[in-house]
Image 1 (cartoon, rainbow, N blue to C red):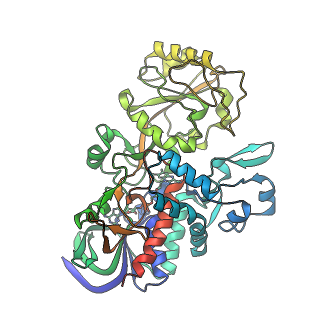
Image 2: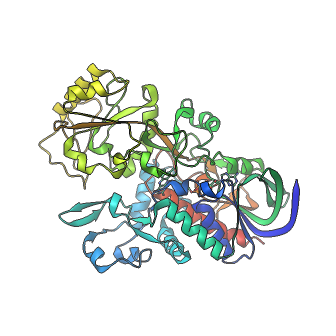
Image 3: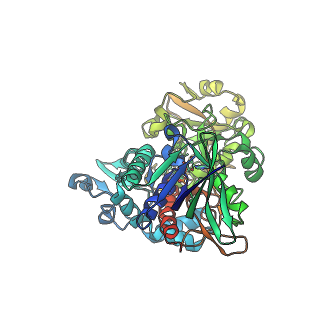
Length: 495
Ligand SMILES: Cc1cc2nc3c(=O)[nH]c(=O)nc-3n(C[C@H](O)[C@H](O)[C@H](O)COP(=O)(O)OP(=O)(O)OC[C@H]3O[C@@H](n4cnc5c(N)ncnc54)[C@H](O)[C@@H]3O)c2cc1C
């Protein structure tokens, strides 16, 4: 192994959103900051690069949003109802979807510092806009945002990573690509550097502090099966192939405490024939998130989940697990022509497994691997159960439900009666794992004895204790940014 004499102030392990926020923040008060990214530059940027760049922040109106999007025009403001998404609403959403398990102190920081953190990112060079395309409905010529998710990075995930990388370069942060961290150098006084492999050589670099931001373990089928449970090796990975739990393993090896929902993860409906890992050319478009407007059927021809239980932002992250639990680990989403215009853009890509039919009888014949007789009976029973006396309204939980079904549809229940009918085959796509390292409010990693580990900080996907069971859409990037920024600042001040 080659050891260098260079002493870095801060080494950041990882090359996604949390890592770059940590590096940029550290650089505000530290001279020598290094980013070690496992991927080569062509595949760099982690899961952050695969995202739509949506970020959930608390805001009290358009004036707050302008802190992130100063170039909002008067015309855009006039034709948009941005509403508000208060800190209390964000806190309530976190508590509700995590079934009141989320760490109260960390969650409070995540929420209260969300807006100021995106403003800070903007000042570093990240550009934001409003997510008119995906998170708002056009009602009578005016856009109305729903679900509290209003902000997105210009250029989505690729734009976000590009802007962060440029900002890092501009600020004199060194980046090494193809540099896979292997272990932490630690002694009785804590962490003192990182051992990594680059271009086939094992190298060691010393640092006054290390920030781990190397993602979860979702791309590691063995850990998935070990911690999430049997069957999880069969899920597709939505994003980067590089998040195999290295950062977590390195920290545990020096005595860090594991915490959070180790058997839980974010997983969604994902194109059935998608590749094993994410494809940067397709990004997040393999996802299929318009199920609230239709119904699901499994291989037995049965509905198995309440497609309209809540807004999609609050159900999509837990329904991947439900699909994985179906026979054959797949399902079909079925829509009729009435809702076609409402289907999200991801339904119009080339790489979909889709069938179209002029009648329900014809449709069920075309559903591969499905019990046709039961499927037809199920769809007819569903149609009969729809409360057509309640008007359909996609902007609110409209209460247009089914009546008397074993598995109800609680909102947006539309009859399937208008051809052409369309069906899309999906399986489970895992996004990221929820279990990880225990950190203090300054992002310092805590040991199994409950003490802070000197010189070790963590942020992003590999931190545990924040998400359990489910997740409010757009919180992953905000989480990485808020705690990345805190971790970088804390690491730079290690004395
Ligand atoms: C398809 C998709 C869409 C998504 N959409 C959104 C969205 O719109 N909004 C949102 O908030 N969240 C979204 N998410 C979730 C979001 O991507 C994550 O929550 C967030 O990006 C995590 O950031 P991170 O920096 O912690 O991890 P990552 O961005 O994954 O970065 C981890 C980095 O660590 C590197 N690494 C791993 N091991 C090592 C090692 N041993 N040494 C050195 N480097 C290492 C990886 O190469 C990578 O660069 C989406 C995820 C996916 C997959």
